[in-house]
Length: 147
Ligand code: DQA
Figure 1 (cartoon, helix red, strand yellow):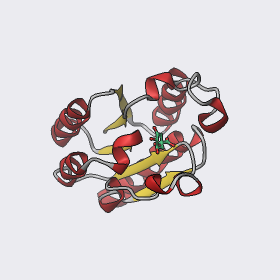
Figure 2 (spheres, rainbow, N blue to C red; figure 1 turned 60 degrees about the horizontal axis):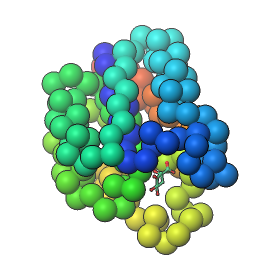
Figure 3 (cartoon, rainbow, N blue to C red; figure 1 turned 90 degrees about the horizontal axis):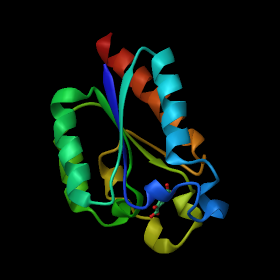
Figure 4 (cartoon, rainbow, N blue to C red; figure 1 turned 45 degrees about the vertical axis):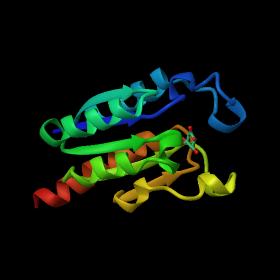
């Protein structure tokens, strides 16, 4: 099975952008860690980042055919995008929402997530480690669904 890992706006700058909040690992480092975890679990991965809302939506639509599960860090679209929520509601497999920072410890506008209305689980504040943990959770949910 394939898992899509989708990243929203500004995450291309991971490692350079506000390292006191998001750490010094780059998105390429995150991808490498996810690939290692996925390989060990017998999963394949597609890893994407975009600053454009429609591209994230198009990947979620593709996932309907091509993915068993989705790990998504929608970044700022978390707090604004009904369109991403609607797209995820059209996807049947497990969805795990990841935030590198603890959004509940930050500005109040980050406390609400549209995507959480669909996510099967949420990881926030575990740094970039959260992504590989989310991949593990998707593997577990897929195994449970197959039983
Ligand atoms: C983020 C948290 C969001 O509030 C923010 O807009 C981001 C990244 C995180 O991973 O902690 O861009 O999703």
